[in-house]
Length: 369
Image (cartoon, rainbow, N blue to C red; front, side, top):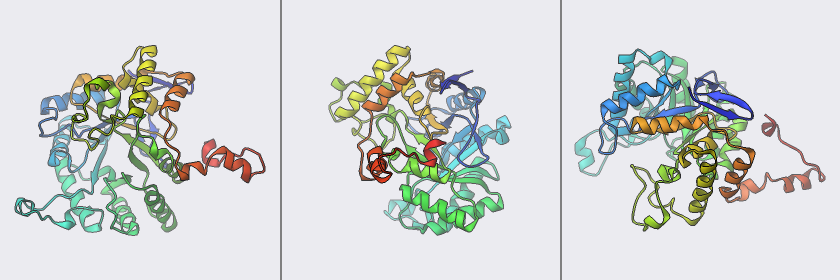
């Protein structure tokens, strides 16, 4: 059993919480399965099954995948595991749509694909969902994510299509990944005004070295009743400490197929890693575990995605919930990783409020929850 102490309360993997303003109940760590299915860097099928079983045994209940992971192979493996274990109704099954799945090898070879096999239009949402349901061997998805905003489809169409799918029972809830904050807020507003189901969560890159979403996405989440579910809380492995500054020449990449390249190897991030390593030594844990503990302790974060390609890696990630960081340790990590304050974030600062409210400090409703 794994435990974490936040605000003097003991939590465990089985201390479930609702995802956003919904009745969907989730564990504090969600299992990301990008490492499941065929691929040179992925776990083999037997190891994937071991990871799957160990996560559920530890009390986790959120399994997150996507239609593009391993070309659909991740969904196929999960469908097999869920059928073999009979755990479908105990699991919160989460998958995604949005990236293009070209209809034929010939089209791909000729450099052309089917434009309606990607994006968030109604035609592709229905196509992608039916394909995912077949691979996952189920007749419904608990949490269906728009994987990425396409910048084309009207938000009204996205909300109406996904809301209709909730109403007919093919999906139970939906959420957005990797989109501007205004898109999520507009979707939530449209849904509320039309009395139709709205998004309940946002999946975003969030870690000690990626805190820019705090400026607008976090306030939107608080106002609209959406949970934050971070992806890459270890920054592609950078925050585990496995990379050394003197060993990086600018030509290497972080492990796995991630979009970071060498962008995490900045002076600022090396300083964050140094402070993280100091705190890790104080609590006698690994830097990666402390980085996860920091994310778990952040206000607005409900469930955090963790991936693994080995049982040892999964066990290390799950053990992060045992860690209780002191106020001083949290303050040091917050200070060294403080994001650059852009224009939007600066408007919410105490100095502005004092000018507005006659030198009185006034807190907003969302900040007091």
